[in-house]
Amino acid sequence: MTVNARWLRSGDGPKHPNESANENTGDDTRMAIQQTRNVLRGDVEIQIYMEIESTHGVGKTVLSEAPGQKIRLPLQVLQTMGIDPKNCMCVAMVGNSMADKIQDGSILGVDRELTQVIDGEIYALEHGGILRVRYLYRLPNGGLRLRSHNDAEYPDEVFSGEDIARENIRILGWIFWWSTLNSRRNAMLLL
Image (cartoon, rainbow, N blue to C red; front, side):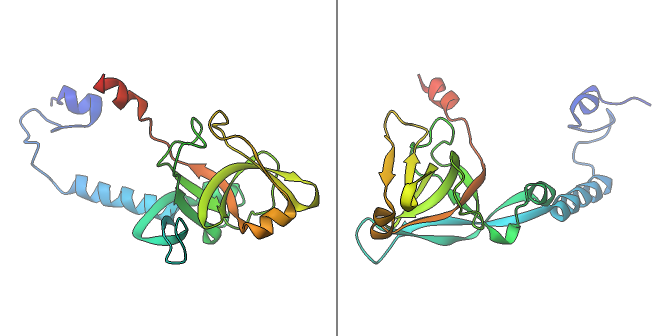
């Protein structure tokens, strides 16, 4: 009995040279369904929220559920990190304030239960009606320092406790995960 070399290397195409790629014995389908079930059993879906224009003022936004848009993450990993999926949300990174670490358009995992600041960690916050992602540092009397990864374009911002209340700064949660697609290669291809 002979086996197709391409199938042996990559699993693509028919297993046997005389077998049509379109023939399906049902075994492949059963295996694919079983693999999907295994993935679903070990994963949890986290709702994605998008920033949309608010009707309560120019330049203000609100986070709203993106219908049908969820990210699947491994439950075991979240449990190992002490993260309860019920307290999680995902948001989209807007802008380049955290580049090169987190790219514009990345999806971020936010643990809404962890709002107590640990200096130098990345948090999602709402500031005067907009979503921001920054490194946070505690300051005396309830103040905060917000630091961008892209500090050349975004210098540190310092807020006293009074500023935080007046400017409606609210920590949404600790960023525990993000997705980043490398867009630089595509730009190079266009040159």
